[in-house]
Image 1 (tube, helix red, strand yellow):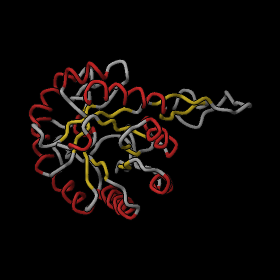
Image 2 (tube, rainbow, N blue to C red; image 1 turned 120 degrees about the vertical axis):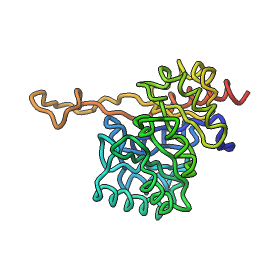
Image 3 (cartoon, one colour; image 1 turned 30 degrees about the horizontal axis):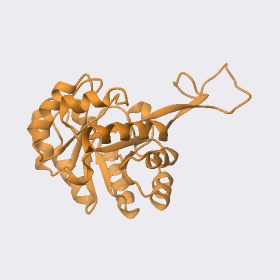
Image 4 (spheres, rainbow, N blue to C red; image 1 turned 90 degrees about the vertical axis):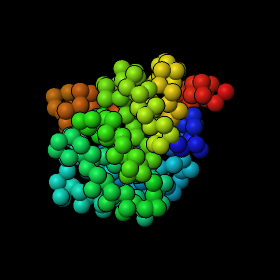
Length: 253
């Protein structure tokens, strides 16, 4: 088990500014990504570089070339490898991956190749795990690959709804890999999640909407499919601190 990070909050940070907020709120590390609405994709070189240059929090970029499923083409797999090389050149603490085969099993061969390429960086597995066809077998596969931890909602739409399965996974892992609940976690439900699952590390975006400062607004057109394009999401240092305090109160005291 990741003993150093017992009672740890990981923040899903969608920008340098969000990573800074996570640090200021007391989080231990960030899963660094872009495009939260699609479940997170690989952030830009500039975002990672600036974060590593100016921040002390652990930076773990997600290696995901697009939204959608986790079955990748050869071109997409090559993109993932190039992004890992970039993360290694910038001295990131680790990376977060997730690749499945068409039948819903973990793509052990491709994952092993990325893990080897990433060394000496450590590797975690994201919620592609929740899309696998057998989470118990997938867990054993990740353990065999020496994955450090796995982010999961227990296969449900939120960690609270998947709490029973999360508790089973924590027990099954038995310290061989860290089970990190994530999805819909906030200061109002994390105490119950800790009590129900026995997990000691947690993942949350702790985000809030930031309104646009634009005075002129064209209401006749849109740039994309987001309902309100005159606001955006950023991690809140206040929400991060509230979560960290809850975790510390429940686990570390």
